[in-house]
Length: 365
Image (cartoon, rainbow, N blue to C red; front, side):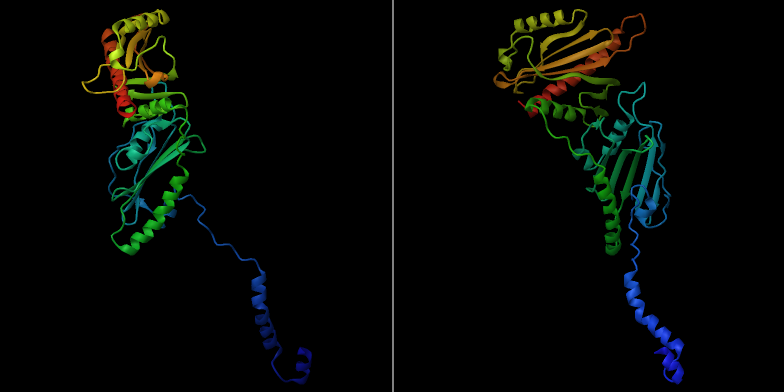
C-alpha cells in the first residue's frame, strides 16, 4: 500500500504513515510489556527512623536525662521529627549476665521499659530467659510510647524507645497516626505470646504470686528458675512446687500444735545435719481476723548459703505447696559468716516469705 501511494504521489507521505502505524500499535506493546512493580516499604520502620517519619530526623534540641539502666550499653541520643513531636532513643550492648550480676542486663532494661503508664500493669513483671525480643505499647496517656527490646543478628541486644505527641491539627494527626500504627504493628510482631497456664491450680497460683511479689523490682524467670534482687541481695527460688510433707500438716490454724512443729523441726534437723537454724519450723504469724489456712516457715544457714522455706497446706487434704528461697552470704575464705550480715540476710528472706504467705491468703485461701 505504501509503495502504491509513493508511485501515485498522492495521499499521506511515507513518514506520516509510519508514525500512524507506530501510535496504532503502541497500546498493545505497552500492555504486553511487564509492568514495573511499585516499590513497597520493605525496610523495617523500627530500624529506619527516616522511613517511619517520612523526613530526615534531627538531634532533639532538649536531650532527656540519662534515666536508663547503667549496664555499659552505648547510645541514647534522642532524635526528633514532626516538629519535635516524634522522638526516638536507642541503646545497644552485650546483654546477658556478668560475673557479679544477679539477673541479666535485659531484665534491668525490662523494668525500665515497664516504668509508668498502662504498660506497667499489662506486662509480665519478670523478664523471661527464653525471650529473644519483647515490646511494650502504651497508648493510655496523651504522649504515646513504644519500647522494643531484642537480640540482634550479631548477638548484641538493642533497646529502642519511641514517643509521640499527636499534632493538634486533625489532618496532620491522622497522617501521623497512620505512620505510628506501622510501628505499633511491628512491635506486636516482636511481642512474645503469653505463657499458657500449665500444671495444677496450686502451682499456677504460686507462679502468679511470685510475679505479684516481684512488683517493680528487677527479676528474671526461666523454665525452672526465678531470681530477683531485694535488699541488696540476689534471691533465687531453689525449690517450688507441690508434694507431700515429711509429716501431715494441718490446714486450719487452730489445729496446729506445738508438738507437731517440734516433730517437724526434728525431721528437718535430721535431713540437714550441718544446718545452723536461724528460725526453727514455726507457724507464720497472722493478723487477727486475717482468715486463711495455716502456713509454716523455717530459715537456716548451710555453709555460705542462707535458705528460707515456706510450707502451705491446702484444703481438703490437698497437696502441700512448698517454696524455698536462697541467697549467698559473703564469707571470707577460711572464716565464718559475719553475724550482722547473716542477720540482715535473714530479715530480707523472711520478709519475702511473709509477703508471699499474705498474698497466698488474699488470692487463694
